[in-house]
Amino acid sequence: MKSDDEWASVIGKLEMFQGLPKKSLTMISRSMKEHTYPSGATVLEEDTDGNTGRMYVVVEGTARAEIDGRSVADFGAGDHFGEMSLLDGGPRSATVVATSDLVLASLASWNFRPILLEEPSIAVHLIEVLAKRLRASNRPRD
Image (tube, rainbow, N blue to C red; front, side, top):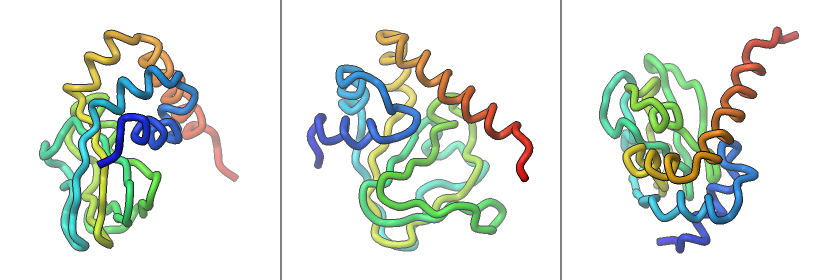
């Protein structure tokens, strides 16, 4: 199990948390929980509320996201998934399966929301990151 400082370092590298002060990263990291899955295990299931409200960061191993049985993304150490559910609590948009033994860190919305209320600058930062992503997705691609 990683220390709060180690988790803060891990999440500080994620786009959605990059640039936050160490104090904010430490607050978030204190709410993280470690999970392990054997190769082949289903972490999340598309269109279900299972584990809703939880974002995951890959600490070790690999995983694959599938929509309607079609592979749409691969994840390795440092990648994350489930951030939409962390923010809105909605059902999962994809199934995620461990493609090797997998160690994940998770952050639950019921732990994250009080942090956002205590540190509104984190919420402002997330809004900026999400707006940047949305703006990029709306640009025509050559």
